[in-house]
Length: 325
Image (cartoon, rainbow, N blue to C red; front, side, top):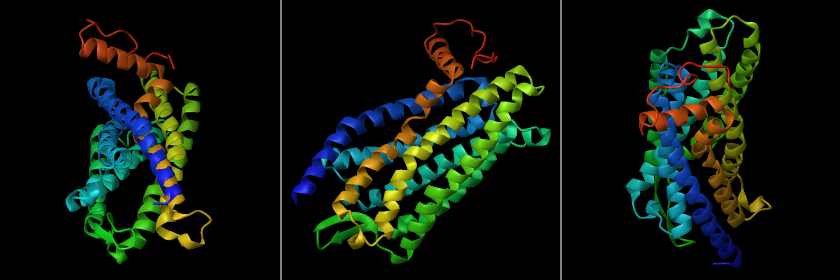
């Protein structure tokens, strides 16, 4: 192994252990906290946007367990289950694709729903009720399961005669163009970012007009809360996802011999941007806590009153929204 490779491997090891492990632990804990809040309060159970955020919390935990945990074990402890088990090689790829696309879809649907919920048009406001929200995600659930099936067939354990190592990689050449240009470029890259940005901007404009419209106080404050939570997450997601998808796309499509960066350097960049990428799935709870004062109150109420019995009566401003944003 070259000096550069050894140095990058050592740096990756420390990053995986001392940065990846806290991200994983805090991410899973945050996802569980989101589920506790969203599933405990009637306010959220009756909101279609909150339904999407609840499902997103489930799949984010799945993404951290199947994706980030594997990265920590591989780079931090030199334990690579994808090289020893062909089943895990295929299972991990399927879960990574399914969980990532499901998470993006939920945020897209939540953004679209907030645009409609804050719209001037009454018919649009009533478009997404809870039942329709569940049906909408159910449709995408089937689509993303079907989308991941070819990956199960295409990814296999392969022996590299040059490096003399076994890796989990694409062995079906016909699948490579789809993976690079459809999955990475469109599904992981452009599509959800365009949807989020477009409808997020429209929802933000609608929310700015709410004070000039006759809207019930409870609904107005709930719309403001959910819209701010969703929009900040959209901006954050764009920042942490784009670099990883870009590097991965280069690795799969570019002629590496013509690039200024070596393969070792690109793989190291892929690792670094990959660690940053998983922040997207680990951070929603902490984004909500920072953005929304009301969400912080709801979390404290749920933990103290429902799960620890410290509060005997729900305080005002938790399920009955008051203008405290």
